[in-house]
Image (cartoon, rainbow, N blue to C red; front, side, top):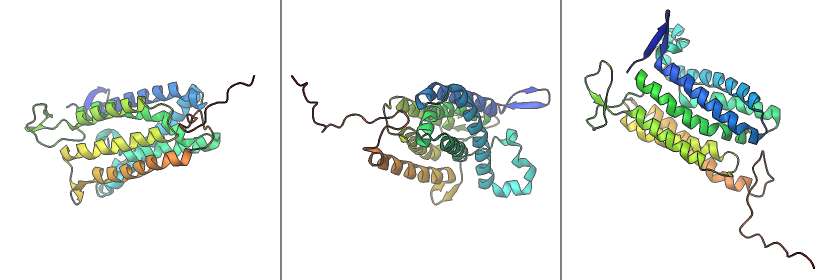
Length: 267
């Protein structure tokens, strides 16, 4: 574990911050490659992605401050010292980025769902990269365990579950699932990502050293339940919502299995 990788003069470069930047770069690169299918220029997608990242950091920080409000009210200045605690909430970051995407899509009169779909694979791949930084920084600290694949954190005498690696593997699996989706209805990709991420985070959280806040659940698990239920409901409703609608932003439904065969050419 190495929370500070190196220093540039008096400025510490945190491991989580560095890998978070790498995650952003990967997500932006993947979104730019997919954006032409939506009718968005790759350079315009770059600008949009940067705004989404800024909004995501702000939203993630606001969520973290609200969750730990008692701590921040004692020292309000620490609200802005994000480089010290690496405090961000994932769903707060997603909400901030989604708000910017919605505003942009509304101004361009394109599908918000399709725009978010473009970002879904990059979110999964970027999350996997960010978990390397979380491991080095000591975030998502696992519970003590004697499993053969345990890890030893710095200044720790107990072996622990490598929960960051669990989340990394889950994110890569989600990425592979998203890559296999073809001609899905608008919104399916982003909802699939949110649902699978919620499930993986809920399960892995049983191995994370976190306080219980709602019966047997941690705060992360409670949030995962809400997001998982909402995203699953969206996935179940989407096919009905889009059946029979005209093509939207590059998506068109395939032929119905009950469509009559084409008439033969006339003589």
